[in-house]
Each structure stands twice: as structure tokens, then as C-alpha cells.
Figure 1 (tube, rainbow, N blue to C red):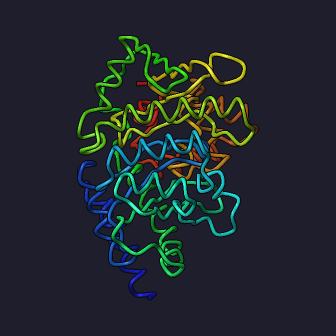
Figure 2: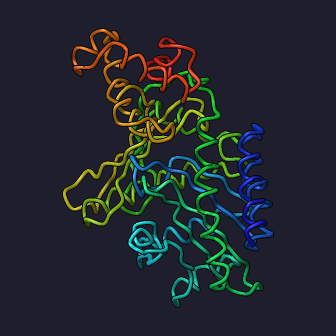
Length: 346
């Protein structure tokens, strides 16, 4: 078993280093995991500890149909979901099978599926994402052995997600767009889309952003709106904010849901914009493993402070500040301050 696990770890790392197009990565990841835990559909969602347990920042999908995603989202809003990330986070071993209760079984069966194995990807630093493996109606349910094997994949999947983000270009490769607003009604229908938001949606719907799943952009907006309402109504509600990396979207992207009434039952505004400076810094530091001291230096650098000023402000020697900067350059692959700052200001 150890040798098989090691092979999966190696293959996942190799995938992320090969520069495979996003639309093909879901199938490639599924092929690596199938000999370990058999499944008929897969979703792998990446987030960062700074973002929390919301919708995730980016994702890879294989054979996962729009109908199933929409049905599970509607069922979660109406009946709740004991296997959502916030629930898994409270478990010592954050893995479970969704679809064991009657209502969920019916929701899965309506889409030709029987259940979904869900594994929260976390380590000592926090949550990095979620693995979902679906089996069709004619397949046997996931067993305890399947759950155990899936948990052994957790560290490799965290490493794979981090490699994907950090292997991408540091500076944006897509032009910035003005901030846009999408208004989602209580019935979860999109009511209003500003021209700026429409431009963002058109970009996110491009096949090379989600593979064959261009529908994910609309589903994501709806899910974020639901999170915004739940965040108002419950302390357990997911934080309605994501910060997505340039590796997936061509530039860092921030999307936030804000309920427009006090009880979270009315309209929700979803704001989508380029993420720069302090907005992207927490997630950026997570993905690139920037230490707290390095992050403080980086924060001041983003504000325009020169290394000598940073040294005075932090009561450090110029040598120490330069050492921190060199560490950041090494971790990010930046050739110098200008290239690093381009990631935060362009």
C-alpha cells in the first residue's frame, strides 16, 4: 500500500509540473486517483487558509455534470448538508460519504449517482481544498477502506494544488477589468449583471478556465450568494469571499458576496474584481509559503517603502530585511523587486 501511495504522490506532483492545460487536468487527476479509489466523477477544489471554507478559489472537474452540481446545491440550501466543509472541519478525520440520508439519496439518484466521498484537504496551516469522488447508481457505495485510502491522498493533493498555483506566472497574463456587480435574488436567479460584471463572466465562462464546464461560473455565483445569506443568518455560514490565483484566471481575482438585507433572505450583491495589494496578499502568502516576518516586509514593500525604510519601521537591520526579500524572491521565482511588485500592482 505504501508503494502505491508513493506512486500517486509522484504522479500528482508530476502532473502539476508538466503545465497541462486546465481543461485536461481534471481527467488527468482522476486517472491518477482511480487505481487508488475507484470513482465515476471527480471534483478537486482549491482554496487557501486565508480564504476559509467557502466555495474555493479554483477547481478541476471530470465527468461531473451540471445537473448534479445544481441539484446538490439546491438540496444543501433547502435541507442542509452534514458533509459540507465546515462540518468536515470539526471531524478528527475530515472525510465522509454524502448521500446516505434519504433526501440526499434521492437528489443523487435523480442525477444517476449514488453518493460522493468528500475529503477536506487540510494540514497544520489550515484548509487547502476539497476532494469529491462520485460513484454512479450501479456502482457499490464507498466503503470504510475507500475513505481510509482517500485520507492518505490528502497531503499529496495539498502539495499538488500548491504546485499548480506556484508554477503559474507571477505577473498577470490577462488585462485587468473594472469591478462588476451581479445581483442574485432570493430564488437564486441572477437578476442584474452590470456590463463590467458581464465582461468578467464572459472571461470565466471560457472553456480553458474550467475545461468543458463553462456553466461553473453561473453556479459559482449562485453558491456564493447562498453563502452570503447563510453567513448573515448563522455563525457557521461560510465566509462569502474568495481570492483566486493568477495560475487559473490569468490574474488574481477577488469575488465577494454581500447580503443586501439584515436577515440574509433577500437579494445578494456579488462583487467581482481584480485582486491587488492587500486584497490578495493573505492568500498569496499562503500559497507561496511566505512566513509571517517575510509577509510583514512584503506588506511594507507593497506600500512603497524602500528596504532601508522597512528596516527602520520594523527595527531590523538592512541585512535582515534583504535576507527576507531574498527568501521571498526564491519562493516566488521573482528576479527582483520590480517583478515581484508587478504581481501586486498590475
